[in-house]
Image 1 (cartoon, rainbow, N blue to C red):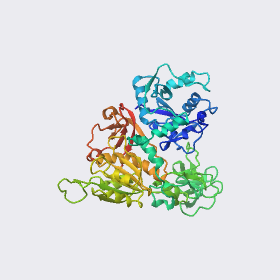
Image 2: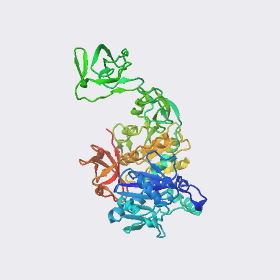
Image 3: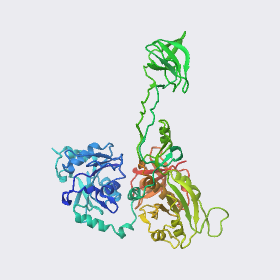
Image 4: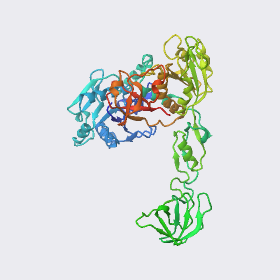
Length: 580
């Protein structure tokens, strides 16, 4: 898919609805702004035009048209100016479409790419063009905006280029009145909830709907994988005092300098103060003496008869790390939502912080299902080796999830009922198998009997479509993975980060994206997850065919990618690295 940026229009008040904040109206468990952001989640850069919304993640830019309320053309102009990247396509999307999806936007991009049109817009079920659901060639949009004398209160038709196309798409009905909102909410009924959902929609649902873990104070060194439940600030300055940044000589005044015999070491006694014209040998990290005006690094120095000289034509540098230049007491080290990683633990320790308020790490029980699965010992007739269960703790650890135990559940009518009833002391149950529709697939029925809140019934993804995600009354998350090993790994790698974000409040990680060189050879009519290796020219090469009953296809591969339907070569895809 051709790279694109996105402008989401979320400004103004709905006069036909009493002046409410229309993008914030919740339909089907999420606001219409959240629906719009999920639909453009594949974009390289996204800007929201409208009133500032503090709940949006920091990677999403926010701007306001000037003057506020001066119409969509003015808002598009403000959004385009704010976009940082230069993707060849720009999506424009209004935040009043409860059922818009990434599939809608992908179809617009595909049609624009294939047709060569300057812009492609969606048409609703009645055939009416929706000019605020479209994709533009950036050059055409820039030219259209520059061709107007003023952007204020201009109709959208003034912006539409002659070379444009309109295609009928589903899910593009907007909500302009209270009655339309009621109709949309009524449409979010049981049939829709049973349909497979797009990956972006599933992730957004999980991030926003899962119950947060309880925050508690902890030693940061013991909770790698947790998330800060509040901002972390410096308890001491960094550096705590002026120190040498290099091995060399602390000097006072202009050279040459009389070199003293004493030496300053990191962690050692501070040398006595210097007077002008003096120098003393210092090591990196040593507390420089009073009177020091700079450090002359070794490679710039020359000594003759106890006199220190600066070599000719060497640059004048301070080479002192001054007190508090990195952090002062009270400075922000990391905001709330930052994952506890080795880097964070080190950064906190450097400013005398060892404990903080955190959520997590997520604790998981792994549940392998099926009478045919055998972990150890010789296989009997009809049995197969458990090749997935032993490696799942390592896979979960990639996302900061700690495995507490791993059990095997036999195929019995009420085994899952007992399992779900015994779940409150775990944050997450990772169930492998029993998610399909076969006679032995009991998980979904057990979740219904347990009155679990189903968040994702199925994924619109191959493999991994039978994945189910739910929350029990106790707050425990249930991740039901397909029994097929590759499908289970694919679903786990696509959804585990969202589950951790939902439970701990972590800021979502920036997705890794790049070109899939042979996308046309691996894409199909539905999004796919395929193994890839790094291409010599950058990007990745995907495997057109993969045996899914085992993980042999992952040997010597660098990761997985999520390929959109009908993708063309060099389409920008999401990369999920396999860690070694």
